[in-house]
Length: 416
Image 1 (cartoon, rainbow, N blue to C red):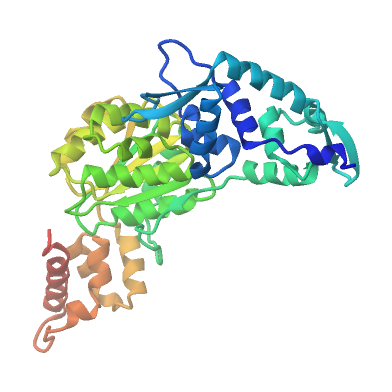
Image 2 (image 1 turned 45 degrees about the horizontal axis):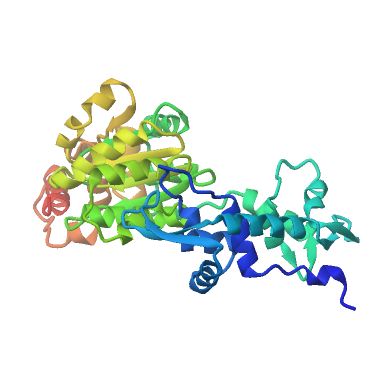
């Protein structure tokens, strides 16, 4: 005769009924994602393409009602499922039978003992985790609940699995100065009162480099997304990037909404983001945002308003467009936003940078005065790009330094 614990293998249909038992229909309430095919697949731990057949069979037997309805976070209607009275009765019977079924439990010492399924929670020690019957079932393999495997799974879940999309962030090689700015930005990130930071300044002044340095300081603690703006960037592109990132954090409402193919409604998007961004422990950098795209700026105003009301999400914006700051004066005056107007390096840090570029120390004073400590200009002074075509013969040192500085600035600003 087959041991009783080996018979403990609930059917997919039984697990679906157990899941839906926790999600009764309430009048005037928008159905949650949990009662969609995707939500059911996630809860029961099966592929979504296995769900329709199981739902059809349960519906045909009168255990489910199937309708199309709006779902929290989604624009288009989806199929949703609720138990009928017959289904509720069957789910209760299944629950009672399975919770009292015998299984084997391999305890922390590796010893195997026979228990009833509902008793698993008694073996979780002082952990605050209390598993539902369906969660217990999902952890049982071949009739055995292996406590050690379960514990390892929980430890892995408790570890901070950080998601960091920083491919577009500049790579930090040498970094000079900016102690005050770093202190300010690090303080704002640690502060619960400041969720938005803007650093602005002219092209090449080191805004992105500074922010990248800040991000390096906080990598052990935060999820991170770096979005680089280009002339062709659109609101749709920003939202799709955010949706992919949030989906990786198991926040799916924005992705589902965008998949609905409805025209983008900024106010609806804002409401979704308020739920999706909350407590994600994320720093999101929007690099080189400009005010030229009015649709983007309107959307960002709403997003910033939301970010100021929620915890666990911070935005850093870099821009060379000082006009953009005017859109956010209210936040600055209310001290809800940290703002840095980034200028050139001081003389000491400029000299350190020039020394790293193997520039003759006799030129330091002149080059600093001419560039006003502009870091990219200082970096370019001894580059092939600058030196090519300059005839130094007959030039005074001052004239030679001036020509180099002018050419470096021309290279930096020719595309602005």
